[in-house]
Length: 58
Image (cartoon, rainbow, N blue to C red; front, side):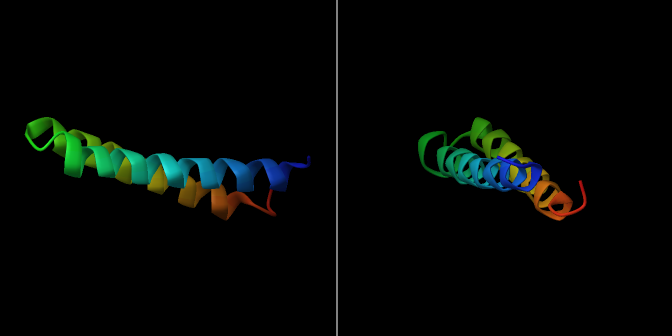
């Protein structure tokens, strides 16, 4: 596996974890804690975006 493959795999893992955390915040924890889960899920999306932007440059 080269660097681009590792970054692509990390991007997909981060996207799936982002969806999982947003889903937990929306459906499992419907109180104040849900906002925290959703915010962390959006943070995972931001990091996945950076990983995707790094593909081909590293």
